[in-house]
Image 1 (cartoon, rainbow, N blue to C red):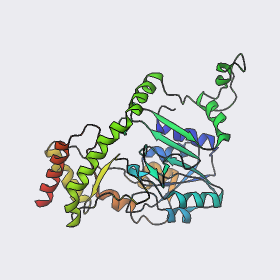
Image 2 (cartoon, one colour):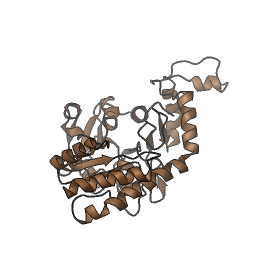
Image 3 (cartoon, rainbow, N blue to C red):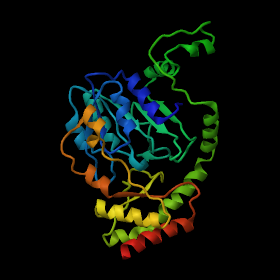
Image 4 (spheres, helix red, strand yellow):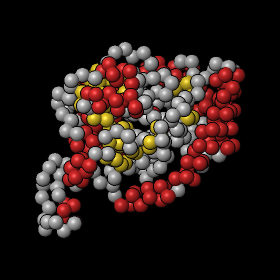
Length: 326
């Protein structure tokens, strides 16, 4: 357990000994922590374009971006929908590269029957207040290779062998490696435990809202006004996020303002990292930005949370319909 997904990502970079001279492949369409965790270690970031259907990193662009300097590939499961992990793992194995899944949005979601965050070498989860399961701030690092476990425990405890004291192996602990304070407090952990005990109830509420949006807005997609989220057949949907794509940035901003006037909170999402000041400083875009910027400017997130009622969903649907009727 960690205080955040950000610290889980930073811990993964530490365990994989990422440093200057290494390259880390990440999607440009993601939260800053995906990139900064590795930039903090001195790595160069290689941003790749996304697929327009799922908004996940394009596995073909990943293949083109791999070089002898590549140390890690970081697939981000956007909106809880899986990246094409078979292709990414195959590339990683071929080039002896590690895979760290950014599963911040992906708890209770699966790829070909495998839980997201459990497929790569490591998986990082978020329990931030915006996530399906939350303790306000919190995270977790899942490790699939036992050789990293002891190092992770030491790094989590500020680089000390404190665990050996607790187990009675030594009388006093000492500084044995580099580390930091990657510990989740007991109170948020207890709150999180209660959330996990009720995950089925929470997910049932979110999925009902997600399906309500999909059914209510389907005819707008059929008529060409919007595009709805795409869930590949071999992936599941954990109802973390419901978004629509409109014609362009201008139309998205008009819809955002219209919903705000009707007391409905919608939101855009990431500004592509490769265009940010720090993205330009610590990384580069590999290949052409065909979809990342264009699709990000079209995307608008609708409200979804535990306890969102059918009536509230219907009201949002009605307001979106009204906007396009105008």
